Image (cartoon, helix red, strand yellow):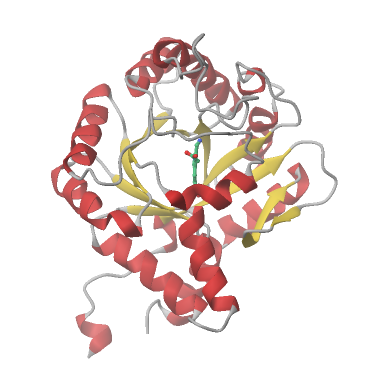
Length: 314
Ligand code: PBG
């Protein structure tokens, strides 16, 4: 009866796996604060991506960890930069089996770790950053990325990337807007995952966790600018914002179950305080229930396996 009356079922196609590829390593490296998640070599990335595709996971969101960084994040726009190089290989091999998507932001590539270029006073220069994002959009589209995840939270970023893509003939490349991206404590493990150089914080461009209305407003601005998908991030602490956005949005809404949300479950599960599988599936189900059409989660592959074996929540 419970099975029959269930209102929502999660499909692996609605899960997107964030993955990290690191330049200059010979073996994949497990991320200390994210057990089970790796900085991949280009080879191990392909194998892991193939596994995700074979389990029916909808997409991969790729982040690059370059060997060298500079003030402008030059490696982000070089066709030979690690992210563009790995994207080209994945898109060629697996582009028909799983959606290959890329993170469009400068923080992995800058020596100061901020999501944009800096003005003379050390603050992030919004409009100068937009020019870099437009170049990055073209570089990623040329590499074969099908969907660009704009995670930098610069004002006007979606409009600028859309115009650049259209002008270059990439009308079919989609834009995922990280619309309501909060300055949260939950990105900590991700900073280890990308070997972040950041000192200070991102409070001049990411949102205040206390603001609910602003999340909806940011999402609506991105819809107007031409986004194809809007996203709320993090996910489980922000289900109210997600619900607001899902109700109002005319386009798909995603949520990002971020590194800290993953690591908290992992840590508790390792202590035997919580069931890993049950907690992860409940988190994903709750995010879908609140209105997300799809979920970015480090559990995508495990969840796809659990969903196939058990049909989801008990
Ligand atoms: C920035 C970016 C971040 C995450 C995704 N893209 C970190 C940040 O804004 O500091 C975090 C994702 C996670 O915590 O899993 N490009």
